[in-house]
Length: 297
Image (cartoon, rainbow, N blue to C red):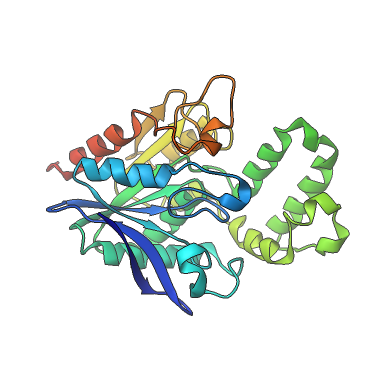
């Protein structure tokens, strides 16, 4: 049965949903992707409704694997942990992830961090100072390129953004160099995307090269990538795989960024229809990986 649990945060409690399983040997801490994404994998403010993380936790529980689905500091159940949800760094998220790994050791002796999208970078950074009971990482649709580069590609993929692309490229270049912009000087359509608080976060976020961080992790890792992902591409998984020769890889045929099978003729269906199931290969593949890693080598 899933239930909310808490650990101390900077200014108030951090909250997660615990799914305990009797006699579990593995527990998975699920780290959400970017922005206001909740522990179920939904982002109501962005019109995203997937239940992807909830479905993942339920699927793992059916296979005997416990889990924690976290709300990031400043959001949802963890709203009181900090006053401004943009006043964060990747290292701060990573520190929270380590603390959740420590908590999850009460669920199972072997704890894994499963980071989705931007959460994959958080998982990699968290593993740089790995808690003793961290057994490995599961990177779900995680970028192998600096996020600023990925963001430019994502904006450019929409033809409607064409007239804005020179300005977007200039903003990202400035943020990568640690320079912020006055939001009032930006085109009105871009001002909400690059508010002062968001820019502070992006300067920190853009400073990480996932490949450089990944090369420092020598432990077990599973890289999961859908070939129909509009946000993170298979070449991102290629980059991560090259940085971590010990990694195993699972490619989801027709898999989207939301870890579900794409719906023909409706590229955004998996972003808006929470009733769609996870990709049929996802949970079995994760379970196989955990089983294999638990065997003596």
